[in-house]
Length: 100
Image (cartoon, rainbow, N blue to C red; front, side, top):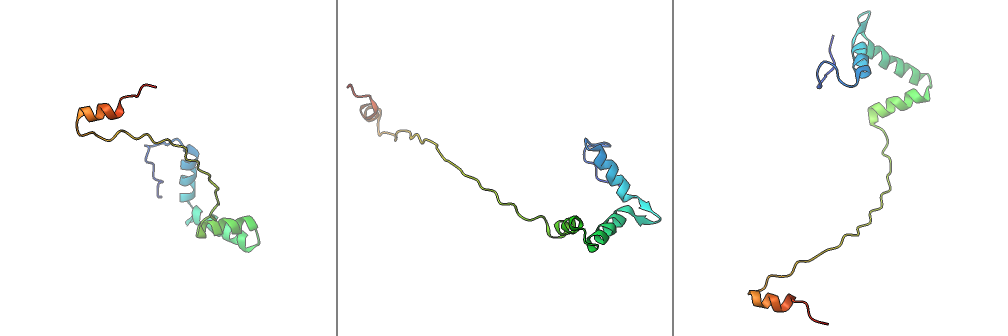
């Protein structure tokens, strides 16, 4: 019997998932339970069960893309630092506040 991968040690925080994986990997009369479940799903789909058909399509083709509308408003302010001056005196005369 194959065991499910458990990266978090012997028991993960999803105990029901772990137990379910163990159960479907087991066999009934030599036939894997997971295979029996898949066959039942296909049989239901062939019988016209729309939910089964949708589940099969989602598993084979992937779920349809959902559209998402996103609006981004960029209201950042840009602060520029002063350009370097050739010498400290030039800088002082350029950037010293002027009296009003």
